[in-house]
Image 1 (cartoon, rainbow, N blue to C red):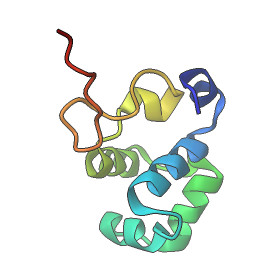
Image 2 (cartoon, one colour):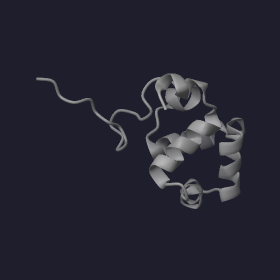
Image 3 (cartoon, rainbow, N blue to C red):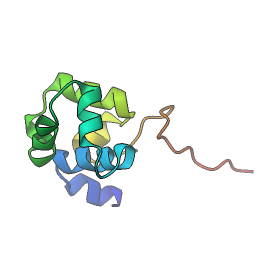
Image 4 (cartoon, helix red, strand yellow):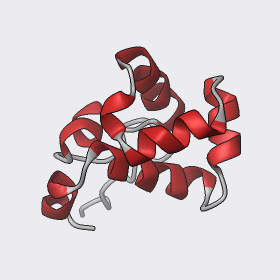
Length: 93
């Protein structure tokens, strides 16, 4: 999915995309456990992303290293610099 496609996706779609990248297709239970919530609650967030609270969103961002602007709007890099998921650009020279 390109950056322009990301900006058209919903928050729930972006939550799902990160969850699959980090925890796998069947990773809802693991993610929900790490966030201290029921797996069905997480499924609801992916289905209707607007239900997630700011505190829960913050926990997800901290756990995954996701860049908040990308998560909320689909703009910019997906992962924060310094996170284990961040891909540094190749060195020039």
